[in-house]
Length: 382
Image 1 (tube, rainbow, N blue to C red):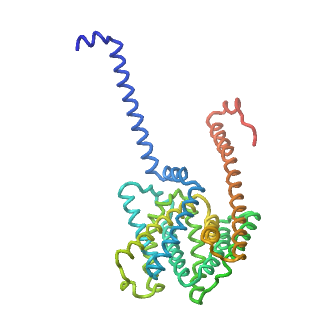
Image 2: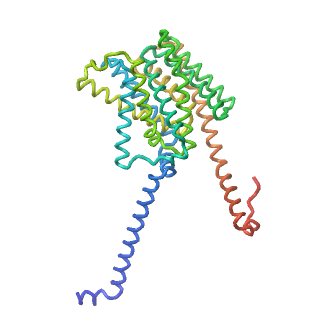
Image 3: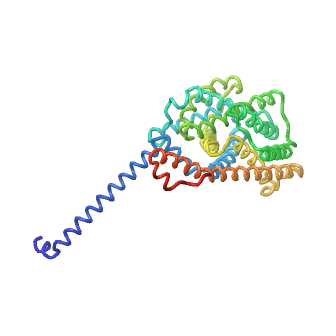
């Protein structure tokens, strides 16, 4: 060892110490990064920033669109091939599965933090959970008792209901060009689905009763996420128990008897659980889309899904919905393209104004703290 020390000399010992010091600094930097990431996930502001970073409008809307198409196939298999004709109970299974999965996320510390209870009254969360139960339960019941065409016609009425409700509740208005685009979209969807309008009195009453809860549900989801620092998963965790409670109370009134005598074999249970997992993804993706865009945009996305399915069946599977339906679908897609373009233009305009606003706020803060600095470097008046 003495020979090695004499051979390496003083410079080698300094090099070894410097390498040890670098390793210590790297370890401290890694620990600081880990602490920073933990802080991001365990605070409401950090969790909201992460959701906005990874789930922008395009990602959220695409995710919701793909899951929506998947759950249509899943529910068709459950209610058609399996013969599970209990729409409220199926919705209850969906939300119960979501609640269990969220509990697992919470146990593994993967659930984002919720805002302080003082920032959001319990009445708002309770109202959202109750409205969500009526919106989801009545939607499945309407789809059971009405044709797909009449179901889509009822969904068209949700758009003006949202616009009117947002104006009454939040004094929110939209431009004339957006109104014109929405009229084209609604008219196109109506034309595309007008050939299939079979319904009965009970189904029509259910569809009409579903319109208002559906609109209020989308408005509340969008408002709480955009104004209350809620993430989609945290809001689902708080509202799902209320939704489950109200679905249990709705089930005896709207579901037919005999659910216990249903054939609960392995094949049927597997199909129902696949539908339940897709239901959880649908709820999550819908919440992300509502947090990233608006209630009206989410309704337009649903109508876009209808037209894409209709045109996809015509192109890929040689189905023949009729010339009128094809023209209506193309008209609706054109209106949706215009509406999306107007939304993107508005978003870019707001993003362009935001740096100027931040610069103005920063300048005012500096002027209050250091007046000589303001005299030397005064920004131009906007």
